[in-house]
Image (cartoon, rainbow, N blue to C red; front, side):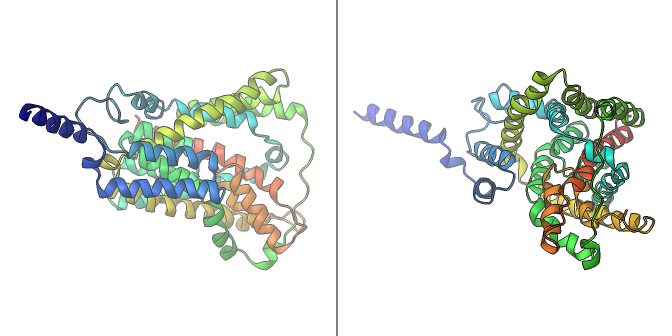
Length: 387
């Protein structure tokens, strides 16, 4: 009887050791709270639900504690686990180009082609990348880490993951979660900055309707765009190549099935995988550090500087443009590449001051330019540090 009792006690001890309860820490509770906040914002507030639901649920998965070192092959950082295999696509930069393929297949560059000068707003918004890079250096991050952190200012999650996987793989989780968080918070962060930097008169500027763009222009754009951008930054070929490839699938008119797959089922599958694994990588025992918190703070600075750069450059351009050709600076915020949310913010803020002044189509030009700009910036930073 005594042996049976000892066996039962030992069995219970073994069972309890393998449950989550003895391994819970304050860090796990903090991260689970963050996960619930993400899911709440996605469902209740409709903030980027396609991103925040997978990421939030991934954070939950990654923060159910377990007995580490027992070779259970559960955690994302345990060799041989299912999650570690799925996370391979993040660490090796496989998922971001596939996302760019889908973005290219769903993006209409007509507004940019009809008013090419708006490309400059997409370039100006990249100021946030280099601003955050310099601040990160001052705060003591390694140059490669600072470059990976800075790319958050582009508000482009796939580009942030791609660059971090090359330059600072140890920070991929923090950088990715930060980038996607600020993408989701575009409607909250940008409007106060836009209103602060513009006058009532500037907010009422009406822009000329975009001109009609021919099919030939649309077909030539991805070919010419690929050649021009990759001649400058060959390092960005995985992103830019897939972006423009997806776009020619769309615009050629003869590969509709491929374009539909790229912008539909393929991008949806990759979004699920990238969101879930990035969320799971926030395992409290490895993720919750001072560096991760610092990355969130720098990401906010980077994003605000990017918005500042886009709006202020639109005001600067207006100094050289004649009446009737001026740019409404409210579309400058769309230079960050959170497509199409930052363009929608331009529209919403504009309508607050004039309910008949629709800025969405105009804002899409710097918005899609921002996608190209952030990829080019990533290629430039890669060329600095991969040599």
